Image (cartoon, rainbow, N blue to C red; front, side):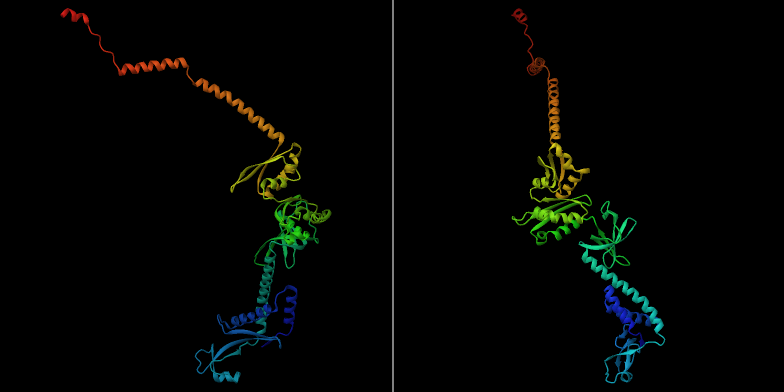
Length: 414
């Protein structure tokens, strides 16, 4: 047996407290390292009956070989005679298995080198599995982290046992990420790598708004108010459609809160990002009108509503056109994402002008068509003459005229 003392067990307990790696993992890795070192030292490729045993009471570890007690030994590597077995264990019988220590002399240095490599590898694997399992459970949820640094436009955020990466496209435009600040992020994905898992987080995901509303609005957490859809352009504006399952509860009012307290807390958390709370409706016309708020709508015409397309024409007052479209088309773009409908917006004057132009084009096309028809018709008198001549020709062909009889010649003969 090799004396290793109590320092190893103290280190195992410390690792278990700091990184959550169970003590048994380290002990088993040490035993496996001893077996590997023994096989390498003895030049044995395969041996299923060899194991390492660690005695926590004495702090000693050794390599043991399990042999079967028999009357006549045929395989010395696997069997032991009854007489030899009784020298080790007195009350042993034929058919029993006994463990015989085979720890080589001066094995401590070789075992230490092998154990060091195996233990480090096992610690990394155990840590990787723990982190992988933890963040797989957190995937699709909000978590709080601390900004560590900015590398190549990526923000590194510490979220516990590992550092997560926030890519540039998942950051809020114009936001300054200062190292040391706490930040609420959304866990997008967890990728397995050769070392620690790579966790991808987002600060611009629409689910962040949803989670904030669930935290601030008790009616949403209780299931009375339901979030139907969210469309967000991070840092600028968000539209959220809500629906109340209780007729006595106003879905929009519940999200706004008393004197706007709830919505103001969420806006502050999102760095003063504008939020439009839209009342959801199963009627597409009403839903589109609500989604285009705060602009007023004159009419909504459904152009297509099937499994292939959802299109609508919306008419707004002239003074509301720019508000309905929004800056760079932001309002109508968010309304499209929120409702799933393709929305074409026209003002009242544009519709009137288009209608007038359509009528004008129709009137211009009608006389031209009449002239074309007049030119194509032949003169009526000429047509009657031609028909009469054609009929006379047909009659002559069907009924040829008889030759005239010479009456004078007949009278002379008489």
